[in-house]
Length: 67
Image (cartoon, rainbow, N blue to C red; front, side, top):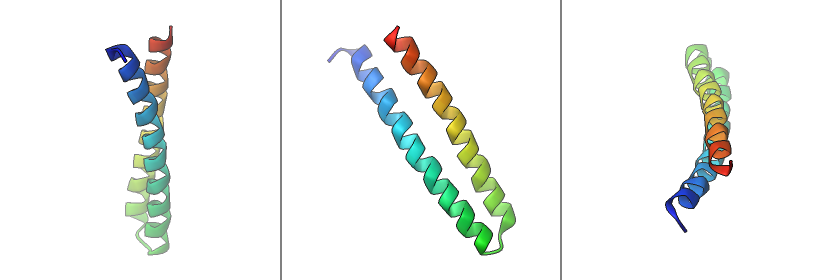
């Protein structure tokens, strides 16, 4: 496997792992909200949204490698 193929594999892996993290942040935001900590829930939701935004960058990087 050359370096570019390795990077492509890593980008896919990172994106998938990022999706898993985003789901975890959502779950903890819901828990924080249920515990009455709205500010913490809002921060965790922001982290989730920023994480999802990063996925767009991973997708763009993957497209650049595949072209």
